[in-house]
Image (cartoon, rainbow, N blue to C red; front, side, top):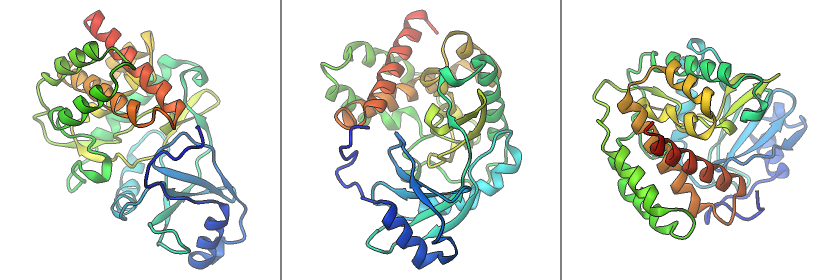
Length: 304
């Protein structure tokens, strides 16, 4: 990361702040060692607390609806899933000059599940597809519909039309905007999701998945959690997997062609939205966004 602020309204935090928050709100944790975790994430600063906990402090102002959502639903989902997910432990309140709610979760060991760290990408693709199938099969009654709390993941593609076209316009000179527009408009015409809403993670990318010993071990960062169109869970087909592993993911997940097209459109929308926004502040995000755009365009050229 460049060291520049990712957001104009970004909140600052450091180890000293976390120590003070713990001392005032969870004094039983105050003497544990604290270390900031390097991350390319854009929503939370992560601090390791002792050996088995992590503090998550928002990078920009928000209300507590996201933390409440995760406290409510992650324990419900966890027993049904074949990979580990975060376990909420405590909800912190604003204090010590920090204006937002924050949280403490169980620490999960592992490293970012980039393609080069996966011993067998095809096996990993099938494993992740199994995870998604298990997630979408959980009873979604009462689950949170898409909205501000999950960055509008799971809404119809048409609802992202204005923001996507604006991002394409802002990316003139950075990418082939004509090709991107054509790809976006093609996938935008895919049939909409017309079945009952299902659970989705909403932000499946390598930095939200952990690997241990070359094998997928956990799915983290559930801020995009919601119920709606599961096409959002197809993003790994373009932001992680390639070639044989992408084909394995598509086959194993079992979604129809219309959902595949919507997932591809969403992957493009997310990538093009990030490109102008993080151009000067987050090189890792920009590399990932450019890669996704290239992969989506190549997929269209192949008639995928």
